[in-house]
Length: 296
Ligand code: GUN
Image 1 (cartoon, rainbow, N blue to C red):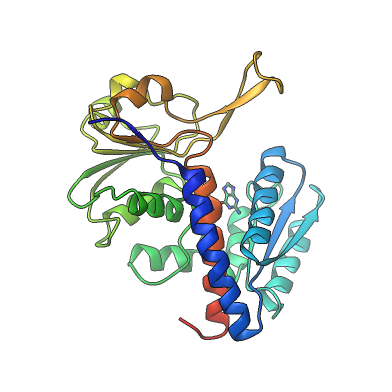
Image 2: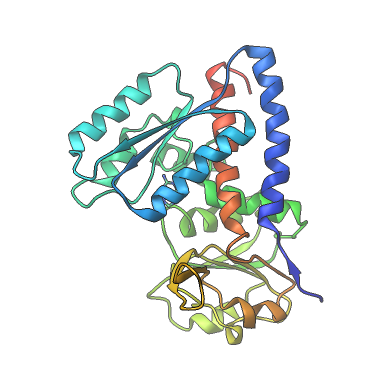
């Protein structure tokens, strides 16, 4: 089977175009403009870049956005007060608090403070629990974006063996649940692997679909991949590169150059899953705006 590159950038642009026209209709019909707020604490460069992309995407699809920047030394109490304010603000449909947060702030407390109806990241346990039971909810943005890619590319998941590498709360764990659910991009048999997994290579060699989300550059190598597998690379790792003008470049969790020739489909980094994460967030924000008006 020939190798196909999954173009997340193009797919994201197409979905955002559709969302833009849906948003125009929504505004015409309701007089309301979907409004996302993003809270950014400290000066983590990656977080600044991610939040910048989110704000930019809001503009592209016709949403309002508000960026709230706070110094790294903000107290937990102050941040929780800000979240309560955003929960109450009738003008805000949904908001996110960009992670990671400075060490003195408890991320669990922060996540629990967000009103689940405004939790467009889908990180609150209420949304996570609904997801696990297959109920309507805000899906975490990256797993949501990946399911949209699988759908768009017509990649069959039912009855296939998916191996997820990495068990984070925001990617690996929700992805493993979603793909095992009875649903259009689910019905798969899922193995969730992590740092304590034994014989990872043997498990990966059984995979029809691999989702790599472990945050280690080039962790998944060609000898671990079955001929014809689908490989979804969630990693965004910055590595030194003396040939790059900036002195560094982005690589995924997959050794792309050597793995790609064995795959039926593969996502590149950059331009694969990354742009789709933002699409997931935009879709959730639109849904939040609809639900605030008691629309389905
Ligand atoms: N940090 C890494 N990914 C995410 C995300 O999807 N949302 C937020 N809020 N923080 C993140």
